[in-house]
Amino acid sequence: MQPVLTSKTFGFSPKGDEIHLFTFSIPDQIEISVMNYGATWTHLLVPDRNGKMEDVVLGFDTLEGYLQKDYQDHYCYIGSTIGRIAGRITDNRFHLEGKTYELPANLNGIHLHGGMEGWDKKVWKSEPFETHNSVGVTFYYQSQDGEENYPGTIDIWVTYTLDETGRLEISYKASSDEKTIINPTNHAYFNLTGDFSKTIEGHGFFIDAEKYLPMNQNSLPTGEIANVGGTPFDFRNLKTINEPIHRNHPQLDLAGGIDHCFVLNQPEDCVVLYDPESGRKLTLSTTEPGLQVYTGNYLGNNFKGKNGLTYGKRTAICLETQHFPDSCNHPEFPSILLMPEEIFQSRTQFVFTAE
Ligand code: BGC
Image (cartoon, rainbow, N blue to C red; front, top):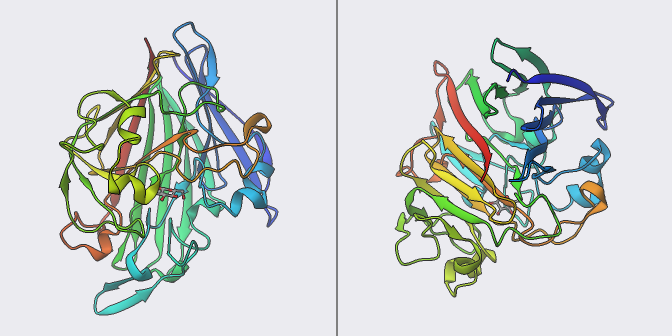
């Protein structure tokens, strides 16, 4: 069925810019909302096996929720677009064309998710659209040369599209006037139970990945590309998160759970998240080589979210499709270089079913 697009004012940014909330929906099947503050995915309502529609992504009911200090102080990036570079960067620096770029440290002395004021905190331009079989919105932002000390002016477009089958796609397109680096992602937190007082430990999880990236005590890849076989990181068959996540394994101790990048074998239906209680299932496809999985280890009931609920450890899971973290310091990883004559493109699709 052809989806319907509506929009409303969600509030005003600290600088007084109007923030719009766009909602795409197909009755009884799916309802998605996104806003132009941080090009953020705010709501996702999908039915359980009895047709009950519930919200399955963390977030806030109002823009003020996203702007509250208690939330901003905890670096959770709920539903946001992350850029220029997702994840952390070793020693807060990288080298390009014989120059060293020093990046600002925003969390515990480390540059994370774009820095002090990443793309998650920018007000984006919005262009809603409708085609014969889809609706959506394209968010646009121009990241100036020198922003957060990165080189080159980047034009970035993030498009959320809902098609007539109920499939959601997030796509990215970017260009730069200078040689630079880019590795954006979306930071939605999923909990398919629709009840944010529950954890995601009972979810089934499948990742088509033979390898993952072990990390060091700073949550940065060591450079090793390790086999998942025989480790808690083996999700090659759908299995409940509960069991592997409580195993004794030094890599789990480092992050209090999973906070690791998986090397995807292939793009189609390469990730599945399934909640046996509600029957809700998310199947993901992506053009990106990596999936950063973060099991909400650092959520600590520090701020009030939707319906006044606080979000505790493992309330949700992030499935961040991207190139590998810290690629700018690992020439052996797939390149995140963006040349002036190139167009950066990336696509991730989400299909929601209930069984
Ligand atoms: C990172 C985590 C971080 C979380 C929230 C994830 O993408 O991998 O280490 O705590 O984002 O900022």
